Length: 253
Image (cartoon, rainbow, N blue to C red; front, top):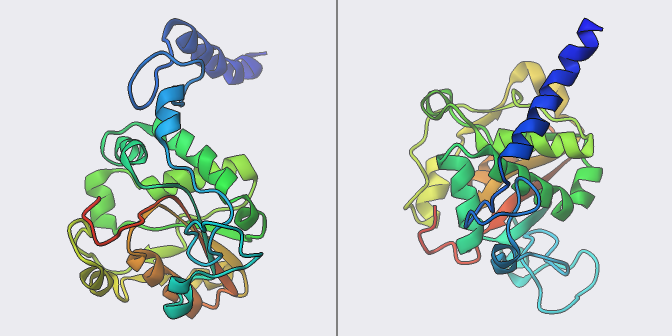
């Protein structure tokens, strides 16, 4: 009886908190019907990415070009990963959610982001053997105390049942923040910055790996991670992010 109550108590407490504390929109703070959600007006301002999209870059097409279609950008400069998907374009409302999770210690924003990513990336998730977050260097993780990519990966794994690991892909050297760097500088900054732990090569060797991050800007970080996973023997590397920057030449995050 004691054991059963110990498991029930946290649920009762959460129910009590939900009852006495009104759920507010994550963006504008007006009352909403469900926790970790947006009001109708803020939801309407999100730029959802829906099919049809480029199979490799996940960028939206104006019209359906058939399964597996690739954009001109993907054909002229193929990415290091195989396929990618994102839930939204990185614009004002999406930026508020990303910054709330990343900089303002609001995990409830991440809960919504993860739900949206699980829907947008459902086909990639279903075909994945393991999901890996983009890692932080241990010094930055110590300063920030939080890896938003790992949080999102954990939540998506809970929703989908797909295995995930936080200890396989590591940032082998410290790099400066990517904020404010142009595409060439970003690529140089993260070149050879990632590796798979030698003792954990079996986790990715011959496997379909889904790499998870919050935002894809130029793709430099995802490319460096993908190359490290290829080197470790991954059979396939796919990419899932919450947001996609359409104009990476502009300063965003």
